Length: 304
Image 1: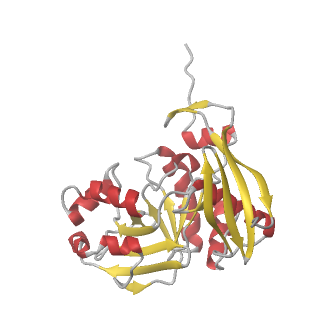
Image 2: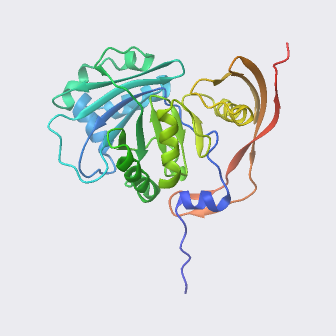
């Protein structure tokens, strides 16, 4: 009897024609903690418990849901010795309120002194300012094999070109979009990257711009707003980080009207979320019944 070999979820997403538009996560701020060497499936939980004590992973999850603070474990691509002093970064990814600082700590327990709600609310002053951006590539294969298989080549390629800015990181959401990249503190997330497509993303970020290919969206905002912003960028050609910013979202079920400002010009974008009408099964996550976003209308001015 022959056995049918199922694809991994990221491969299945490509086979089904899924696109990552509108899938950026709820991240609004970050705490990045270096942990070199092998990563177990629970490396994040291990580091957080050592730093903040028992129950820390659950408290961090609550902060993520309530305030958008995401803790990611990071390490340099390749085989690295354990650093004498781990690198720690804190920062905010909100439009108009971006910041990134590097902390000097002797060990994880020193992190317990951090005012995490203040970080989540965008108040800096914890360390030395960093001239960003950083390129954070999810490679946490013990959480999902797709991130290791597709993320590591992306991280390696970026590290060769931008060694001081590139970090591997733990899971930040969206395994099926691997290779996944978060640009911090710019606050934009990309998916389905390969080494060749990752470099233009990094170069655009260094110019203070957004690359539209493979863009999942702006983190920390409503998915409808992410889709609307991308649609207006495609219409206008505006690439600056905040040249295009979505505002009010009026959602009714699977359809929403989104106000978008594009360099002082208002737009109204109507977006609908609908089933794609295809399905499949993956080795990672079982049955997939994907959805997509359609832009139904894009008007050059918001009605009075």
